[in-house]
Length: 122
Image 1 (cartoon, rainbow, N blue to C red):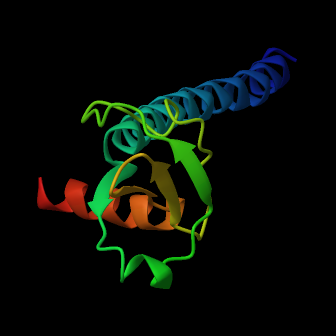
Image 2 (cartoon, one colour; image 1 turned 180 degrees about the vertical axis):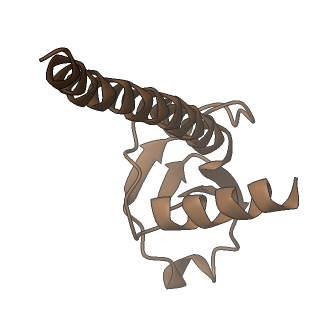
């Protein structure tokens, strides 16, 4: 009877220990995943926009997503400052009223590719 109870106890405790290890591993991988997500978010804030100087004759070839009042061209500005949502597969161009520059907002696809390459090169 004691052997039978001992086997039952092992049969009950062993899966709990394995489950705890799996859960711990999942927790660690989700922490590193969330760290990677945070890294990508930070990258997007820094790298999503650029200002392009466009000659008037070439601006007709750009398909604009809209126009905006030209903010002071700030190298620390982000797409959030302009109220632009990043699109998955479309780089967006906005005519800046009162400026000869165009606001370019990279697509999420391009940002992911560039982010991945930047991590590999480090």
